[in-house]
Structures are given as C-alpha cells and as structure tokens.
Amino acid sequence: MSNQPTYPLMPHATASWLVDNTALTFEQISEFCGLHILEVQAMADDLAGQKYTGRDPVHSGELNQAEIDRGQANPNYRLRMQKAPLSVSRTKGPRYTPVSKRQDKPDGIAWILRNHPEISDAQVGKLIGTTRNTIAAIRDRSHWNIANINPKDPVTLGLCSQRELDALVAKAAKRAGIEEDEGVADLRLGTDRDALIEELRAEREAHSKAAAEAAQEAEAQAWLQARRAEGLSDS
Image 1 (tube, rainbow, N blue to C red):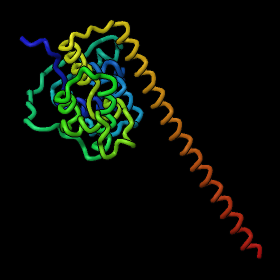
Image 2 (image 1 turned 120 degrees about the horizontal axis):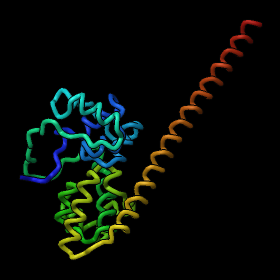
Image 3 (image 1 turned 90 degrees about the horizontal axis):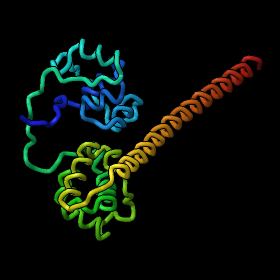
Image 4 (image 1 turned 180 degrees about the vertical axis):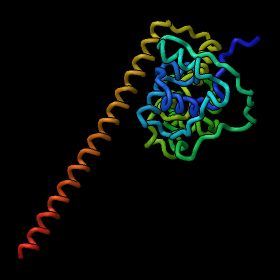
C-alpha cells in the first residue's frame, strides 16, 4: 500500500473554497491541499497571480462538515481525506504553463541553476516546462534576453509548487550524494518564507496607499468642480 499522501483532485480550487467558506487555518488548508502555506496566504490576501473558482470538497465527498468542524475547533487538527479522488495521470509532453506565466520561465530557470546546480537539465525542463536548449542558453548566457533575466524563485512566480520543488531538490541531492543539515535547510526555508511574507505585505500596503491616493484625488476633483459650479452660479 502506498504511503504517498492523498490530496484533492483540484488543490488550488479546493484551497480557495476553504479560505472563503471556513475558519480553518492557512496551515490546515495547505496541508490538506498539498500546497505551500504562502500560496494559501496569497489566495486569502487576493495577491495570487491566478484567481481560482472555489471547488466545494464537501460536495465532492473529499471532506464532510463534521471534519471541517473538528478542524475549526482545533487549529492543530489535521484534516483527513474522506474520499480519495480518482487518480488522473498526466499525458506525456511538456508541462503546460499559462501564457501569462511563460515570460517568467527564464527567471525561474536562472534561479534553479544558481541555487540548485545538482538538479539536471532534464529535471528542470520537466519542472518548469521548458527545453534543454533554453536551459543551456541561460546557463552559458547566450539567451537572447539574458540582460533582462533576473533569478527568481519559481514557486513565487507560480511556475511550480513548493512541494514539487522540494521533492526535486531532495531527489537530486540524494543522487548527487549531498546531505544537507536539517537546521540549515530549515533556516533557509524560514528566510525565504519571511522574505516572501514581507514582499506580500509590501504589495498589500502599496495597493492600500494607491487606493487612498486615488480617493483623495477624486475628492479633490469633486471639491474643485463644486467650487467652479458655485462660481458660475454667482456670476
């Protein structure tokens, strides 16, 4: 019997529904859906690069209301899949990436090449959905747009999930005979997480500031128009 964890058939859509319709913690939702907790937080803050239509796991039978109630009553409770979804195997071929994300691929590839040289080109191509020629061009800096390529975490770019990247890094490290101290790994992950949370917070504050400035501008325009109207009526 497989020890692999079972996740919802549509994890992002399910997470979106749980965020909007329950009081479960981000950690509970991320564990149940197999997503990184920052992906769930981005959904809650409306900062996710892609908006998902919620999928009700109760309707699909993957959860029931009693299980959700137990989770809401105890933040440390781990939700249990009630009905495993039918497995769907991905057809052979390159990984599909939405058009809006394709321009980010070179940045994600550059980040992996810089931070995880133990990962093979074939593995990078499968994870990101690109070709070996593109990877080679970025590595030897012969890519046509190399001047504008900035290494960025492919998880934050939405090119893959944190679990997919972690699994690939672990597999590549094992094959290369690299053993990383758990404390160092945890520290690095914590640093990356803190940096992304700070980035999300800064974006949220920027949006709020822009909205406030727009409101002030609209108020000023309305006041000016009112004064002009008063001037015309006096004349």
